[in-house]
Image (cartoon, rainbow, N blue to C red):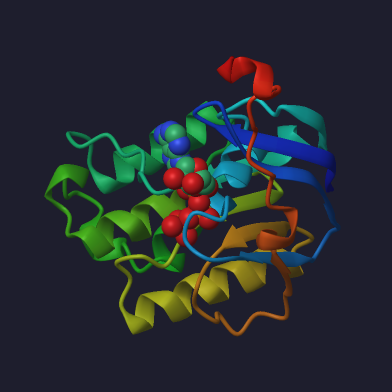
Length: 201
Ligand SMILES: Nc1ncnc2c1ncn2[C@@H]1O[C@H](COP(=O)(O)OP(=O)(O)OP(=O)(O)O)[C@@H](O)[C@H]1O
């Protein structure tokens, strides 16, 4: 469903990770771990097509729905309008499951710009459910969520996996999913050094 072969990524021209290979099949989840700055976001952005890879191949990117640090909401549109907008963009219809999955029914008419941080995050994650995409790529999805919302999110991921989807995510918290874990530190790129001492002559 998603496969990375020897993918190397850089940020701001600086190599971050080298030769990452992984694969995700239907029903599978993989959690990326690693210390701050290890390269989790950089790798997820590359999988989402937001930045080019230095080398290697990513297969299955056309099935990816991405939720990153920014929620990507239109502040003047209501909760329902935001979801309907994204559903149309992805050629889907029906936003009810997304609304109930993230406990947004009482907020349908509220402009997204007037939501709390956690409510915005719930709406940002609910967007995934109206994309119809099979591979969810998530960067720290639980930031700003309270305990009940984290549990709802974990349920949504579980349902997505049970329906034949897959999920690749960076998260520091245990969601109680039956997921594999990959520490990206082992792919850390060696810093580029000056070509030779001649550079200093
Ligand atoms: N816009 C940028 N320009 C240049 N370098 C960047 C940029 N954003 C991040 N970096 C650097 O790229 C490296 C990888 O950062 P990245 O955000 O992928 O790490 P991360 O594993 O997601 O970290 P965290 O757990 O803190 O979110 C870090 O050294 C970081 O300082």
